[in-house]
Amino acid sequence: MKICVYAIAKNESKNLDKWLNSMSEADYITVLDTGSTDNTLELLQNDPRVTKVEQKIIDPWRFDVARNESMKLIPEDADILVCTDPDEFFEPGWAKILRDNWTPEITRCHYTYAWSHNDLGEPQDVFIYDKIHTRDYHWIFPVHEVLYPNTLEGFEEHVLEVGESIYLHHEQDKSKDRTSYFDLLKLSVEENPTESHSRMLLAREYLVKEDYDNALKEYLACLDMSDIYLPERQLVLLETLGRCGDIYRVKGDYDKALVYYNKFIEKENTHREPYFCMAEIYNELGQYALAKAIMQTALQICKHHYDWVERRDNWIAKAEDILSVSEFYLGNYDEAIRLAQIAVKHSPNDIRLLKNYICFLEKRYLGE
Image 1 (cartoon, rainbow, N blue to C red):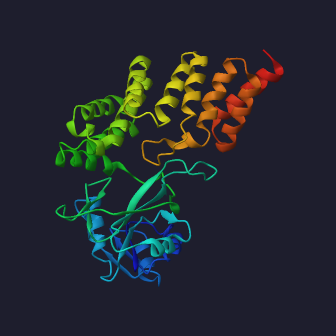
Image 2: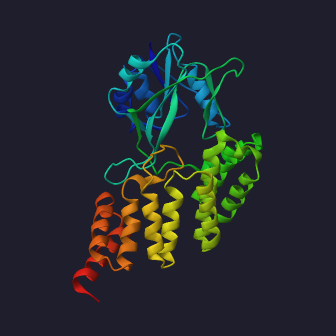
Image 3: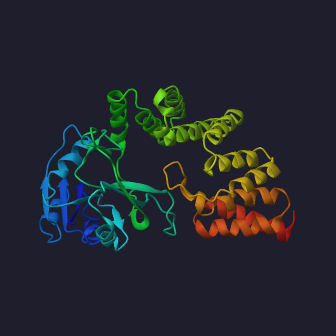
């Protein structure tokens, strides 16, 4: 079994050496440069680890077109195709896992992906990824592109589940311009008017821009789409319900926020997210005993879904953060300090957490 890593790149010179080191466990590395203005193309052309590199300007820009063009560079004898970006890095040993476990009927591999990390380098947004595959797929959607079978007739997908034995880390570059995403997402909705996933992603982009009115409008439109209630759209539905709750919370309409968090729980009650959000609301309302009770329910949930509905540090120290506030106002100062200390340990640069911790200490040892 021969493995080929393939990628698209533009102005990635600062990441290339680390990325190539990580990907060099493969038999081949191919890259489509989509118009670098730094020395990315030259570095790739002169690096012996790179099997093939070409430059092609994609105009108008679409991620699916770029990905499909990049696949044309893959050598014909490659069996396992691994799509990564130059700001993503595997933990060592990933290729051996594939070679040791891949069988002829497998078409795709599911593995672990950390999209973001906290200040200590601990993974935050962690979910199952699926960009290791055979030639049976192509890319669709202008942005947030996904793999889709070349033909549905007679096709059966067989997935190799490797969990955390293959772990890909994304080193997020927050300086990168994502303005093109908005227009591409609107295009995706126009091209797929009955597809709730595309509209949900557009709503999320409005949310990133803090345009809460338009975000809510799009999320509510998602809930009017018939496909969102299909089993295969379960995550889209949960994400939409949760984000509707978030927006109403930002708007100060706690009653409606709680309605949507409860709708989330009615549909699926093994995610921590709606419980955590409700507990935060009750803390804000001064109902600390109720917040604590909800958190006790949430902490009985031990199933880590590894999907994109799970939020950041809900499996690191978010629970300690929320509970520390409840315990403090319930007069349990020692417990509040203990919990706040855990929260600060995992996010030492979070000013809010530090202020909470200091406040709890002052109340405990200095009184009023």
